[in-house]
Length: 326
Image (cartoon, rainbow, N blue to C red; front, side):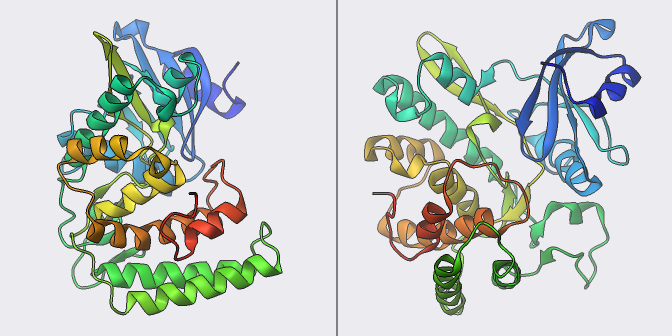
């Protein structure tokens, strides 16, 4: 399969040989390329439609205060925010979704127990390292790191988590009446749940400060390597939705939108063991709030999230029940 036409001139300009693609990853077109003229082997070439998405992804992996401190984020080779492209080192592994398909399954739960435990434990370790980077008191878009903050934060950034949530709920409400994927009954359910969240927000305080968050963890953004029978997550990519939020916001999308919440308790505990936390009742109560926000973000966001969940399922996830998929 050849890359899309708009990426072909970029390949020529950068003297890169196309190897494989296009690959879906976030909002970007991505292809695997070879840099034989530099003797550096394979790399990942990303191209975005907007400078905003490009800047966010490039800041996430190239800014000295963020991704460059996490060894599991591949190093940037070259990039241009203005021209909306990034050349990234190729991780020494394969995408998790590709590896699962090679095993004849699409879910972690169908793997032998030893492999699924190793996989989830290593994922927890990796995410803990990502979430160890503090946001410096800002909540929202990471593009603010390259702008003067002062007393006036850039658009998309807030001084408090509650301010960010209130803005998101307002955005969801405005989008609701124009959402072509919803019928009238679904809209009424959404309005009720949005009202519930507004009420809950008045007494909700995040336990943890905002940290460097991936923004939309998916199986194709996680890279794995196998040795001696153990499979481990070794890298992550796809940072064009990166943000400064409490870590639970990242976990909510991974667990509820990607379906890890439907795994056996033994596997959930393996993840939290690697993450260095306990999945207590208090954590689960807070998780519900972040899950509902994540579901609305996918259901009503103008961005193309490309998930395999129906509108009805997302509305259930946006509701108050603890385990709507059970």
